[in-house]
Every structure is written in structure tokens, then in C-alpha cells.
Length: 110
Image (tube, rainbow, N blue to C red; front, side):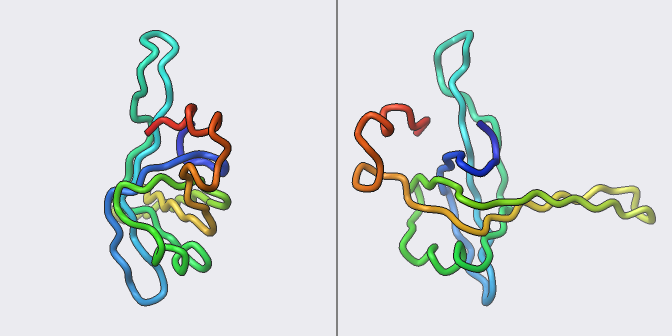
């Protein structure tokens, strides 16, 4: 699944700033070999901006969300010989039994 639009993510920590939030989150996928869920994306520094930043007021740690809009940006700093990758979420919805059909929640990796 990974970090992508339409993917589900579990929220571990929210650090609210003035115009954005830095969120620690993970995504998981089911292994074809073992049938168990395995973490396939983890970051402590996913930036939630715009509508996503505003919607975080209704989210608490351990909630699962569905990412509706996101982007990945990278830039290379030649002087430091370092590549920086930024993960950004623009919009999401909470993924719980009230907002998803019951059969869809069976497929959630959390």
C-alpha cells in the first residue's frame, strides 16, 4: 500500500504548528507469503497542510485515516551531498466503522 492517495495510515503522534502539523504515521500491507500485516511505510515527519492540518483537530493518536490527497517531494543538496524527501498530506478522512461500510473495515490493516 505505502504512502499514497487512497491508502490507509495509522496516526501515532501529532505535533501541531501554526500553519501545518508534523505527524508520525505508518501504513501496512498484507504479506502474500505469511498472510500477516507488515509495515511498509513509516515516517515521523509527514507534513499535514491546508485542509488536512485543520481536520487534525478531530483526530487522536491511534486513529486510522484514509489519505485523499498527498505528494512526495525530494530535493538534492549538492553541498551536503544529501537528498531530502518531504511527505505532504493535503486532505484525508477518518477511517472508522461510522464512515466506511462494514466489509471495507475488515480489510483495514490496523
